[in-house]
Amino acid sequence: MTPPRLEMLGVKKRFGATAALGGVDFSVPAGSVHALVGENGAGKSTLMKVLAGAHPADEGAMRLDGEPYAPRDPMDARRAGVAMIYQELSLCPHLSVEENILLGMEPTVAAGFLRRAEIRRRAREALARLGHAEIPPALMTGKLSNAKQQLVEIARAVAIGCRVLVLDEPTSSLSQADAQALFELVDQLKAEGHAIVYISHFLEEVRRVSDHFTVLRDGKSVGSGVTAEASTDQIVQMMVGREVNDLYPRSKRTPGEIVLELSSLSGKKKPRDATLALRRGEVLGIAGLMGAGRTELLRAVFGLDPVRSGEVRLLAFHGNAAPSQRWQQGAGMLSEDRKREGLALGLSIADNLTLSRLNGLGPPGFIIPRRQRAAAQTWVERIGVRCRSPRQAVGTLSGGNQQKVAIARLLHHDVDVLLLDEPTRGIDVASKAQIYRLIDELAARGKAVLMVSSYLPELLGTCDRVAVMSRGVLGQAKPVEQIDAHQIMLEATGS
Image 1 (cartoon, rainbow, N blue to C red):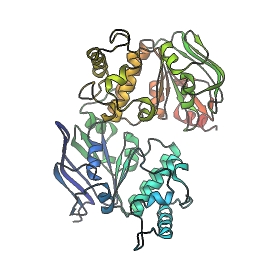
Image 2: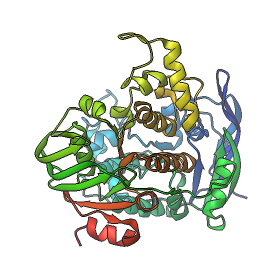
Image 3: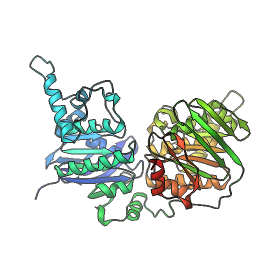
Image 4: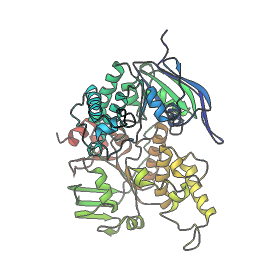
């Protein structure tokens, strides 16, 4: 009997007193796609870092094609044929495509000089195998789109002759068309005999691409099976250890006064024309394709991007304002890029959560640490942030827990208008359910929510009305009862 391409048996890993992996069994045959799913913090990233040589396992064993496998470091793993494509791409934007594809594995002559012609030939060959010979090997990688940069990463894996390819949240920054192209590429790589590990929080993607799945919870493998034979509800129940009922809760909402009004708003480039009225007790969604101008719209409202023309009325305030003024006026924004813009990753949870509003945490000009920690602990408990204490650095949390901290800051500030840009991107199903429930509670309490999302079921399940943005122009908001996913896509594509 042919052994699996990859086997991980009883893998354990501790960081101090924390057991990140408590004994994981995982295997992938050649020519198949195995999905690895679980909540944020379940141990998926740690397991893959052990596989990729970034962390040594404390206990357990790994095998590649039946042979012992224990990489000393990531380069050793690459040489053995294990390639990782991280959610945050690890390319050098100032290097060319061909230089990135062969980085660290460059062919040289005896004197140590690079064989440039051989580098270009191998890069062209790898891109052609993926069906993308049109990408110029000499082009600076930073000039490519996210989708094309991801292809360069995969081409690098192909060029080194990878046996195991790990894709970590590969569609998180892709348009629907690019995501579909990626699925077809995964099918092709599978047919060529690669063993593929696919990590995603989108279970519809898992069902589309994978043959088998394994669920991690609290650092242990708690379930696995044939993907086609398991329902989405069954997988979710394995992930969270309980049933997740009513994913999109909807309490009684009573729309009140208009709290945010935009009149023919246009920015430096986008939006080109946006008019809307958001009321208290309402969740209004903004749909559209990537690049349509949705993020730019929220940034213009919050004062992060310049406004060229048009008017913004926020509660009793008219005109443009800086972000610090928007906070004081009663609006808060959740950025789609929590790592670069939404959070200060080196600061503690307590600092990130309270910095926009320090009132009550000490005498004027001072902060009493005990009060700050107590205030942060209240929100940590209320929205279920998984952490050791409020003093823990935000950068050490999982993506879903980082997102909860960013949302908790808006709650601590007690803003009336919440501008949420992709609030559930890159987080697990259980964390999404918590955020949907929180949004529902806020709307029921009379808060107003303006939410951008690329995930149509989320918009239709959470929002009262949805407006579609296409090429920088915002269409009229319609009640969710009068619009569906097909109509949204027609409007988004200008059809």
